[in-house]
Length: 436
Ligand code: TRP
Image (cartoon, rainbow, N blue to C red; front, side, top):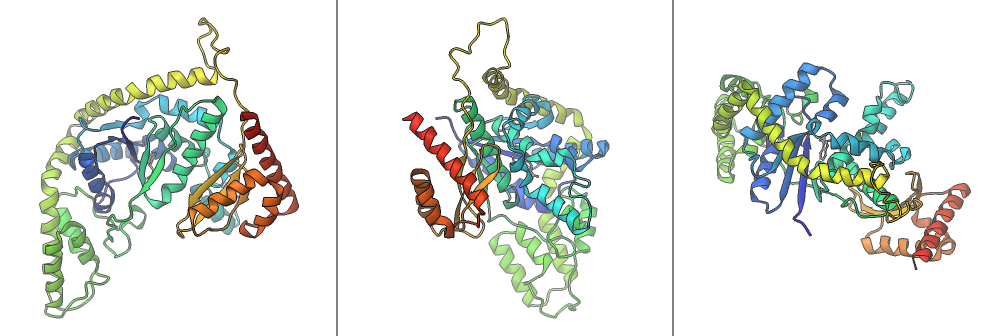
């Protein structure tokens, strides 16, 4: 077995801010140093085109994000750092995956569903303003991950569904083409990372327009920190740390001891102006050395280009042989070579699949999904994974009898849906018998 591979994509569609740094860059870079594993970091610039159709901005953001990662300490000699659009095998794999992914599966993707819901709420056509790019986004993301056979994908909660879809695509492809071409990737959700509030106290986010750019020049950083919202307590009046954006941002940078000192200063009535000065100095102390490197790289984009090209060459040492194998597996072959069809296994009929997973509510669920992605059965929550597993086992072995008994543990099914589910269970049993 090879070492564990971690893979992370960053979409270059804006300027990195302090929230991105504390919540993503800093922990990811720390992990890349300490882990005895292989790390892949890439700029998801094909993804950027989905939300940003301003070419100058895509280019600018690619420069800023690449420079930020490198300035913050990502070591391209130790990790594989590349730009998605330098890897032609990714869009090629995206197409192979597109052809084994049920449209129904994509209909259920959160980002697409949210767009449809919004249209419905405003009385527009369901797909109004929805590009096929937004709809296909999970497949492109699946290709990003599967092109490197990544084992672990560190992501925010909002991305977990995409990793599950990548697993579905991997297992469909493996199943249809009859071999373990792909490892099934797993999401790794880091719940303990800092989320920083922005200037107005809401979560720091581009969409709230309340961000502090990570590498704002020193004087701009001072000014922005000066504009963080505070209450109107006068100097000398004790201040609340609870709900203070200033305090929370400080905490995102300071040691435990420094944080305690600021807590005490709040209780003693530190003036807001003075607290802002402390925050400014603390952040600047961490960022100033990085800022220098950042400014150098942004001023010398040819250096960035060279680093990214080297990263792409390293990345393609993996993707080129994989895609060669996959092209042959699906039947895109050099016709002059002796037919390998005889030795390749015939493509199997695609089967329905059980999927077991855990939801944010902490309970365990399963579902039965047809090969085309149609949902056939959806369980309610179980307290333990073993209970969900047992229910699946019974459905697999006993079919109709088990289904009748388990109905109260499932989301409601009309009789047509029950018939479809039974047919799928039957198909699974036949396939299992055929395998012996
Ligand atoms: N969709 C991710 C985001 O918006 C970025 C991304 C693209 C990604 N491809 C990926 C993350 C592959 C992990 C793996 O944050």
